[in-house]
Image (cartoon, rainbow, N blue to C red; front, side, top):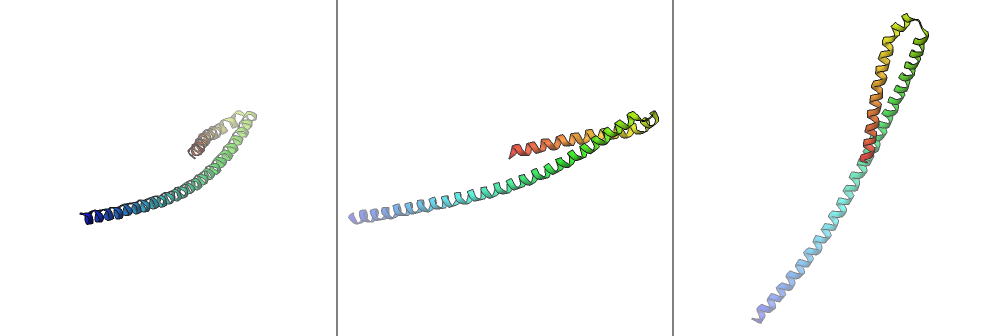
Length: 127
């Protein structure tokens, strides 16, 4: 009986040691996986931030271009309106269609400008 008790205690001791070893290995692997995950998250965030910055730059450029187009057309429209006031009725009728077209284009560009501004604000909010 004492031999069995001794064998049982020895087996229990070996199993306890094995369990502790497996726990240590598990903890080490868990730490390694957490570190690996953190690095991957950092890489994904860096790529996302880079893409966001690039997209913001593109939208800012498009917004500046659209604003410039808007300003140009607005100035053309102003000059056309000034010209219309000083010209005779015949010239007024001839240019009325052009003025309407420019005003429609200004309205369209204004809508695009507002849309781009909204998109840029949304992008900034999401970052």
